[in-house]
Image (cartoon, rainbow, N blue to C red):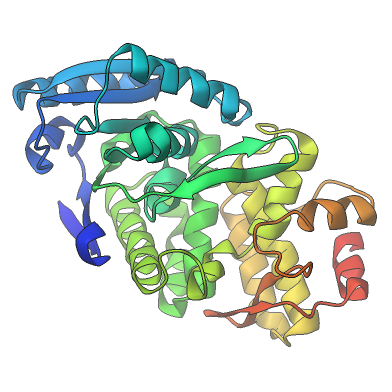
Amino acid sequence: MRRLDVALGQRSYPITIGRGVLARAGELVPWGTRRAVIVTNAIVAAHHLPALRASLDRAGLAVEVVLIPDGEQHKNWDTLNDVLTRLLELKVDRTTPIVALGGGVVGDLAGFAAAIYQRGIPYVQVPTTLLAQVDSSVGGKTAVNHRSGKNMIGAFHQPFAVLIDTGCLATLPAREVTAGLAEVVKYGAIRDAGFFEWLERNMRALLDRDDDALAHAICESCRVKAEIVAADERETGERALLNFGHTFGHAIETATGYGTWLHGEAVGTGMLLASRLSERVCGLPAAERSRVEALVAAAGLPTVAPKLPLDRWLDLMGRDKKVEHGRMRFVLLERLARAVVRADVDERDLAAVLSG
């Protein structure tokens, strides 16, 4: 079992990583309460709720469960309102934590509910997908989608613990594992050349769900994200680099309908587009662009973006949260593991990349 810390002063919290963490949740977290509300979906509940609930029972917590529908298409205001209504019906007070048991949809939505219910209650992230374990459960970004854009309605609200049970990945569909690997590749591409090289050597082991390989990839991903979040909690600077591939990726998700492409699939394709744009705008060496393309392909991620008119791409990317003063900002690579934010991208370069 491994532990990392997200260093945010009074809002600091631990990330505990290992097989069997779920069954020890009651002892691993200083709950400080006698009650908890688990938010999850029926699919995750069938696999993982019994172990979590039994652990919390042993710790003396009275447990309530709130089920939400599965899928990105349900990460919206209607589902959020249903969760808030249920919290009110249960007479949840400010001392009662929410426990988000599931993937990114559950974590984002339950975290947002915790951020706004009674102006903020505590919550714990218990991610069960690879993507959530390496990315969305860490850092305190919470949100729901709007039909005009992904994650456009949300808040920064840090959990007080993240519990990552690598054993949960055994029940994950292969497509979800592949989608999660997109975010893993991202960390190497933007920050850590040594980790990127390790991924090039070990992608097959990750796809085969080798325990040691997965644990290493999760720990390294969380380490990079924890360092960046600690330096820039509210994304006023360095944290924007974590959005490599996401400007294109979010546009793909919105254009195709939430849930058609998994988030990681869209980000994987987005990283290919961002790498090609990096070559044109930042002088990323062609050999390094090719390495990004090869690793994304080796992970089994889509390598061809949907065909959209240029004005549709521009409209969707123009709504991105990184837009400032009406100018789109792209996370690009000057070199592998050296990412920058650029707001001076010429539309002709964009057109060339998107038509290629």
